Amino acid sequence: MIHEKKVIDLNVSHTTEVVDHKKSTKHRMDVLDGKTIMLCYIVKTIEEKVETAEADICELYIQLDESRTICTAMTNADAIIHGQREEMETMRIQLRILQYAIGNDKSRTRPSFLYTLGIKDIEEATGPIPKLVRRLLQEFEDVISDELLRKLPPKRNINHKIEHISSAKPPSRALYCIAQPEFDEIRK
Image 1 (cartoon, rainbow, N blue to C red):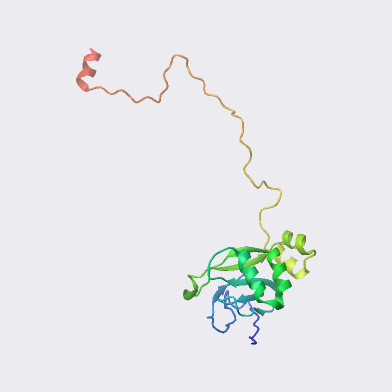
Image 2: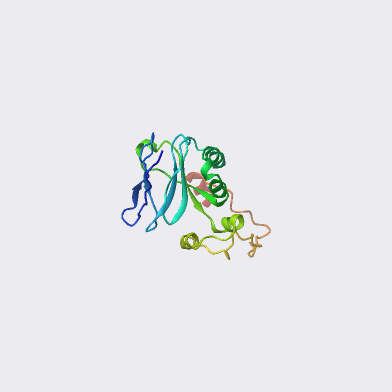
């Protein structure tokens, strides 16, 4: 079974449709500015062959019936798709999960995931990264630098002191209010 390959050009529109597969519906997808993305699309049943739209970047899009652990879904997909076993194995190590909502009303009840590559994870797992992928990852790198602390600073020592008068009562007691006739009598 051969499906058409489709290059998604994001310069034209921010909303594109993923390739239509047998026994599945078209899904709307909002995409990043000005980048062409290669998508691997696994249909609802996760039993049909993965179809790829070739372009500049390799990202994996999987539609799942339930929002369980992604590793289980990747393992199941790996067992079904024999031709892409090595790619799936490296993708499992390299990819981070970002939950992604599909724009199609029929599919809103079904969770889906968009995977993105992380530079450090890829280099540790597979070695050097291709220049094209490295350029894209660096373009969308976090704004916060690594020099900043990843947690809150430690508590400071108390640098102020409240001095109390030894015979004074603390002001946390309620005010004593008396009736007007008693007040007038005390005044006399």
